[in-house]
Image (cartoon, rainbow, N blue to C red; front, top):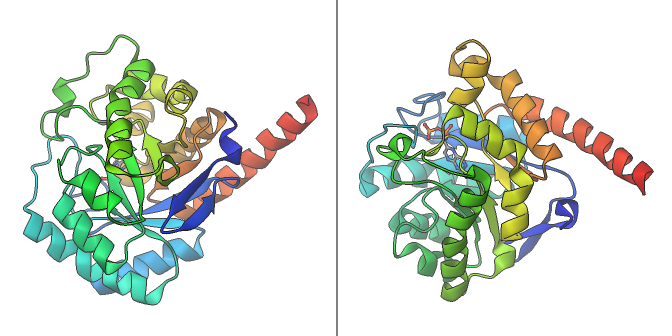
Length: 288
Ligand code: HH2
């Protein structure tokens, strides 16, 4: 598989992944681990969204529930109240594609009706209604690997070969999506960095990301931004000071075949990925 030649189809549009695709994170939650409470409400969120687009985001990912380790679930009504006004404001003002980061079909359905372009499901179709909900639209779908729930996941880190097992455990969700009528071209996969993984397993997963992309045959999205393993490698720096470390993880992931990168700090990732990608392409051209 040549990941550089892959595309992602959302809402009838084919997004090219020739250039690495940067996904800007917009958490409209009070408690997200690195930016909780900063962008709540349509005005603050829209300002943040505009800035991320100016800095080079190709897609914005709006989430109304923190899924950090130990986080308790929020009620669907609360999640809808957080997400829908923000989604409405962004879609009215900006032309950028938007995904909704949710595990709930009811939230996904409302967001899709509002005009969201993709569903980012960290539970990989854990809600029995999710596949049919996405199938009924022509939206894109991100299937992320996790075990258990954010409350329990860090007790579920027993793996033999983490890359192979993550790929194998995502396969049933791909099959379920196909059975529901979601075309493969609409799907990207995500190893779920920090979701039921130890710091060492996160490193190994990124180092062997091509196993996940190769086994599943779909483009890989990497979500390493500001996560705890980055902080641990940098002597325990707080989440807001992990953006340079995040860029390191993105470039390493790019070298292993990831084509989409979910980040809090867009400008640095955009620059680093464009430069690294050009260098890797020059290397590949020389080797031919
Ligand atoms: N990570 C988080 C949330 N959603 N979605 C995908 N596809 N991949 C990820 O790695 C991923 C994700 C957790 O990070 P964040 O949104 O910054 O924090 P919180 O869950 O506390 O809101």
